[in-house]
Image (cartoon, rainbow, N blue to C red; front, top):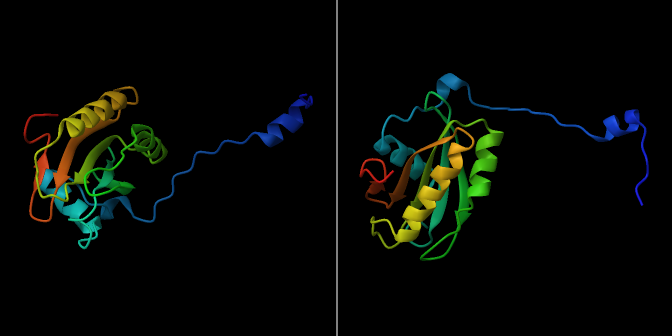
Length: 156
């Protein structure tokens, strides 16, 4: 059974507030101009002791000027896979007002070639971004020594 509320009570219960707080000044954020710069920034966030043990998925969120808003550690998996949920990727993007993003995961095996699942996920996330005017500008596969860029290789 639903209890009727008068309009003043209803308005007191419902509250929506949009807030964005950053501890970093815009002028201090790194700007990403290339896949190499993105790779270098991602590596700084990785635990080098686990890079060759478990697969992780991270997302770099960028503003309109390709300055880094955040690198979000989306998931940690096992030796051969991890889960990357596009809904969470875009929930974070919308919350921090990102315009562009770069997907990234490591291959503990050291193999830089994308799997069919890597290609399908990148395509799915890219397609979902179109509905929110958020562009996937690259997807990287990283190892301690090198990286594979979907954009540089013409896949994205």
